[in-house]
Every structure is written in structure tokens, then in C-alpha cells.
Length: 97
Image 1: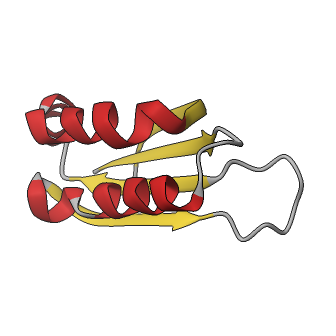
Image 2: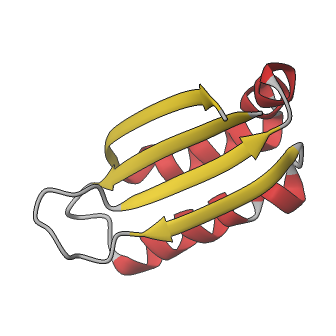
Image 3: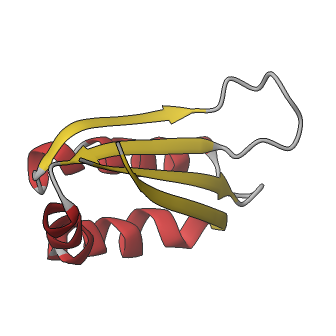
């Protein structure tokens, strides 16, 4: 199994509505794209300074399932329309579980 973890740091000027729309669009990826056995998208609890704004954690059966998701037009559209316009920084890792 492959676990995909992405942290997002939003621009300070992103605004609550745009952040909420990005979070909702990311959460819909399981329904809209599929291919994952687990997906969670959560906003930072604000307990420590310097944290990212949100995290996405998704599990895939194998690398091929991850690549299908990563290249899916719906996924790419969500990133282009909702994430990238408010993104200050992003970090990701994929690892075997």
C-alpha cells in the first residue's frame, strides 16, 4: 500500500471562503476520482506556530493506483482551480505502508 501525505500552507490573504472551498474540493476527490482506500483532509488545529494550514492523507493499493489519481483530470482540475491560487507552500511524501 502507498500512503500519500501532502501539507498545504495557504497564503495569508486566501480568505475563509476560498480555504473552505479548497478543503471541500480536496475532500470530494475520493468520490470524484476514487482509487483510494482512505482519504482525510484536515485543517491544522493551530496548536503550534509555523505549522502548515492543512493536510491530505490518502492510501492507495499500489503505486499504479497513486499514479492514476495523480494524473486524473479531476484531481488536476481541483489543484488548478482551488489549491494553487491560494497556495503559499506545499510538501508531499509517498511511502510504503
